Each structure stands twice: as structure tokens, then as C-alpha cells.
Image 1: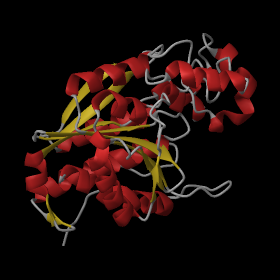
Image 2: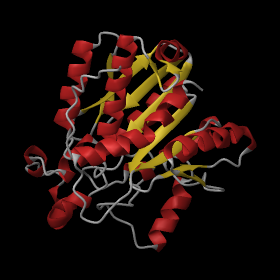
Image 3: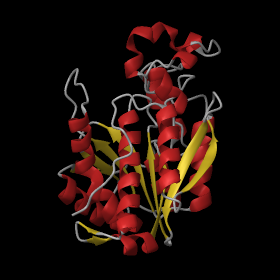
Length: 307
């Protein structure tokens, strides 16, 4: 029987301070966990990353590009804790030999790409009291729970190089020309310190497979049509089978300036955008529902480590 301590507390409002606390907790209990920073946000918060495993196969999970999707950060951290504890107990889990996965793959996780935006969305007092960027978000004070961008109104997942100009023209035609809560890709690509940090971290490590975690949809997005990305389709079907999510083949979408599309265009390796869970209007995310979301995607990560 596998007994897991679950030191990470499940909460709907998973802010940046809770990320820092939980990373420190995991580091205290599991000395094999490596902790580092890839850069800083606009307000100077360290963008944390953790590394688990020692293998040559390099997997990267990033979460909370969007401010209103902090639950993806929590799910990434829940997997990190479970993986570490399984390693400690030297267990076989769902048919996977955890010690072998640890030696085969290295898992890198940036659990919160957008700490300022998350804290704004959750109406943390120190962010609300910061006057420097208040002119950008103050007219949305009644709808901050829907805020997706960073603190200065740039949608971080639309700030990557691949097809940025084409993407911007599409947005301009829709009237999206200024900073705001969502869909504004910035004055130029990599204009934001958060995306520059992810970009440089990715270029440095040359990952073999990456995941962009988003909230709601129960879908897995990937362009599986390129010849060099045939492996992406095979992996995507495995992910579809274990999760029950639908694999969406984003044919001819590599020009869009999202992280996963830039990664595939740049490195010709698989990258998946996973939209976790199913949305219900005005839903309160209880611990039970968050655990359900986690259970849906857990084996996707295990498969990637065994790939």
C-alpha cells in the first residue's frame, strides 16, 4: 500500500507565497530536489523552478502563464510531491518503476510563470497597493478574477517569437491594440521578463518534450502533422487514452505565438498544451474537484518520463 503524506495543501487560491512555501517544504523533506530561479517578474518576484530526476531525457512542465489559472500551478506541485514520495518509497506505481523513471528522465517544472498576474487575480494586497501599473488594471477591479495577463497587461502566452507579427495583425483586426486583461501579446515578442526567462531557460536546456498547462477544456493541443513531429501524434494518442481528454491536432497553427507552438517550431520536438478539467459556470473548486483534475492528468506526466 502506498501512503502519501500530502504536505502540499489544496486550495483554490494558490498564490505566489504558497508556491514559495511549498517548494521550501519539499526541499526540506526531499534533499534530492533541486531548486533554482530562472529570472524575475516585473515586480521582482523570483520565477522558481524545480528539478526532479537524473536522466538524459529532459521534460519541462510550465504552469500559470495565465494569471487566472493558478490551479495548474497547484497540480504541477502535487505531481512533484507525489513523484518525490514514490521515489523515496522505491515503489512501483501504475506499472511504472519509479526508480527507473528517475534515472531515465530529468523533470523540470516552472510552477508559476506569472507570479505578479496570479497575485493580482487573487487580489493580494501588496499588488493592489502598487501604483506603478494601476492605470492598466484599475478599470477591471470588479473582474480581476478573470485577469489572464501579467501585471502590465500582456498575455504572456502570446509573447513568444513564432509568428508574433502575424498574430499581432490578427489581434489588431479584432481591436486588441492595448494592454489589458487578456489577448494583448505585447509591443514586441519577448517584451516581458517572464517570457524572456522561459525562452532563455528553454534554449539553455533544449528539452525533449514540454507541457504548457492551462485550465478548462479537457483537451490536448499539438500540431502533429509535421514529419519531424510524428512522435508527437503517437504520444498524444497515449495521453488521450489515459486521460480521457481529446487530442486536438492544430494543423498549420505553428505561426501562433504561444509557447508550445514556438517550441515545436524552434526545436522540432513535441510540445503539448493541456487544458485541464471541465469548467462549470460559477464553479467553486473544492479539494475534491482539484484532486479529480489532478487524477485526470497524472499518468500523462508518468508516460512522458518513461518515453
